[in-house]
Image 1 (cartoon, rainbow, N blue to C red):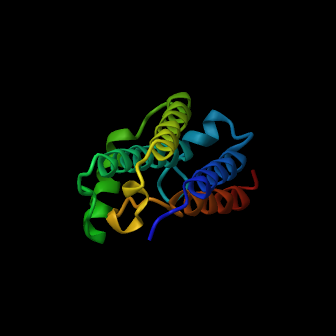
Image 2 (cartoon, rainbow, N blue to C red; image 1 turned 45 degrees about the vertical axis):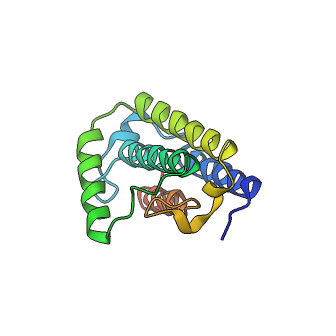
Image 3 (tube, rainbow, N blue to C red; image 1 turned 120 degrees about the vertical axis):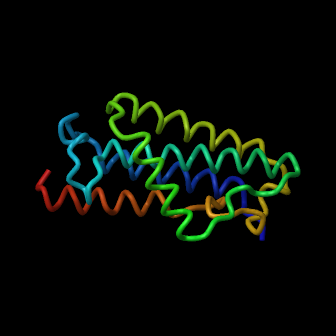
Length: 150
């Protein structure tokens, strides 16, 4: 099944707006506290940036006529998340925000220039074309803010 390019771009713009609203007004100290299920907000941003980069690469790869390289099991996905979080932990809030912005731009640019083949959702693995991943993290951040009263 093919995704509609404009709808997909609007989806990614909306989920990013919601995430940015969820972190609006947080100090760097709160952004780097590891009190959100063992992760900091900056860790969440770095994690989302990593997956945006992977998704952008998949769109480019599939546009070029190649197969997905991100078809993985749930266990592999968990292992990847653990490794990436460990490697990216400790980034400054400034870098986390930059990574988030740059990776989303790459994803939106990849979608905007994608071939029709790349709009076929059946060709994607775990880092699929449309994703509710960011909305899930936004929900966790909003829950954390409510619990902390910030």
